[in-house]
Image 1 (cartoon, one colour):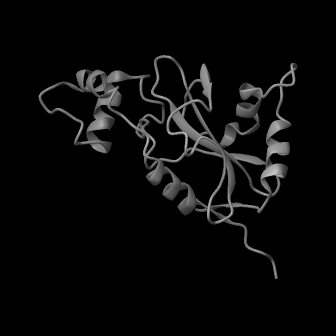
Image 2 (cartoon, helix red, strand yellow; image 1 turned 180 degrees about the vertical axis):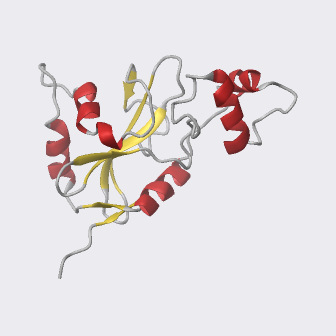
Length: 171
């Protein structure tokens, strides 16, 4: 079922997003995670979080052609492949969404890659068969593929645009 977003200016979105601050007045990603926790369907760690990751063209605040204003964030523990997720405004509250397409994570365990090497290798075999080496076991495949996994910004944006639609005006 598609989600919906409300049209909002970048400035207004930034004010709403920046209102999630810690005691020092800086953005508190743990508080943000708590605020949107029910939307985060994939388990990942916030040890390394921010906007200094590649692909920079989807990280940070952007407006999609359909009008969706979002903030793209990458996060993951030292042992995890970083996960891309967005925060957007649905008209009532901040929401989060983790795209599936173009975003490498284990869709069977619903965890960032790196938490279960054997399960990750099996999942890579399904999602990325061109990377999978059938001569290795699943655990070996995870360790071999770990550095080969890449986020695909075009697929990520297409996933977001397909899943999150503009809110329909009531007549």
